[in-house]
Structure formats: C-alpha cells, structure tokens
Length: 220
Image (cartoon, one colour):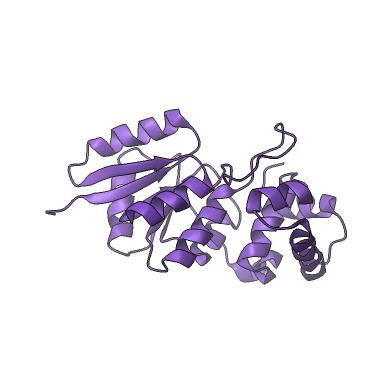
C-alpha cells in the first residue's frame, strides 16, 4: 500500500491511547493522525481531518457539560460520536474498540453504522488487521464477539437516539445530566424517556436497569 491508513484514535484514557498508538506504530501502513478523549472532540477531529478509519471506544464523556455527580458512571459518549460522525458522513469507516462486549451492544453498534466491533481483550496484533478490514469496507468482528439476534431483544424497538438515552438511564444518569451531556433540552429527554417506557412496557428507571442487566447492556 502506497498511502498509509490515516486513523483517528478515540479513548478517554491517555495510557490506553498511548498503548494502542505504540502498537499501530509497528504497522508500516497505518498512521495515527489524531487522538480524542470524548465524543465531541472525536466528531470535531473527524470533521477537521477526514481520517480513513475511526477507532472508537464506547464508554467516555460526550464532551458536553459533565454530570453534577462525578461519581456517576460516564455515559456512552462513543455512541453519540458514532451517531454524529455517521450523520456528517454516511461513508465514514468506524471500528469500535471497547471493553463493553456483552449483550446486544455489538448488534446496536453495527446497526448504528460501525463497520467493526473489537473488544479490548483481543490479541494486540488483531488491531491492525481489524483496521485494514474496516478500511477495505469489510465488516470485522473479533473472535470473542457474538452478535445476538436483535429480534429477540425488546430494545430493537428503540430508535438510535432512544437507545442512547436508554443506555444512559441504565447506567444511573439523571434526565438533567443526560440533557446536558447530549446537548438537548430536559423536555426532549423526558419525551424520549416516555417513549422508552411505552415501548418497553416499563414504569420506572429501576425497571430500565433490570432490563438492561438481563440483556447484557450493563453489568450487575
């Protein structure tokens, strides 16, 4: 390959990014052209640089105002970044590289437009292979990933935006926190929450948490 594959590396842990960058430096045909540590920065770097492949973690801040309670789990800012990048450029090639490997997350991520899904438990040399596959516009799933049939999961009824809100509610974020982090009004988040309750036939955030645990979306 004459030209190197230009990669945007997105993860909110500097040590993790440094480790992945070191691995990729061993590949003569791959170059990390930029890094980002939240969803908003990832989107802005993508617009600015038009990388060939985005390597994206899921669990990170969105880049908007942080939650009032910093002890809360960070929301899935990677999903928001994926949504924005794909809305901006529907030909964007995104490889999700995350520790969030169970349940329906791989299926939802692929449904949202990612071309690949790889877990951080994978072999180090697998990352370069995954990037090349995604660059070639071929779907890539690491060997330890299973994609369940979404038809068997009630969250299939949710839109991409509703699933984002659902996953954040399941991780304990409040409506006001989600509104700030997604740059939406609390009224809009309440409307999404109402639709989620109706579609999933639940009546409380506690039921959302239990449903998410049962389907492997969050850990108990």
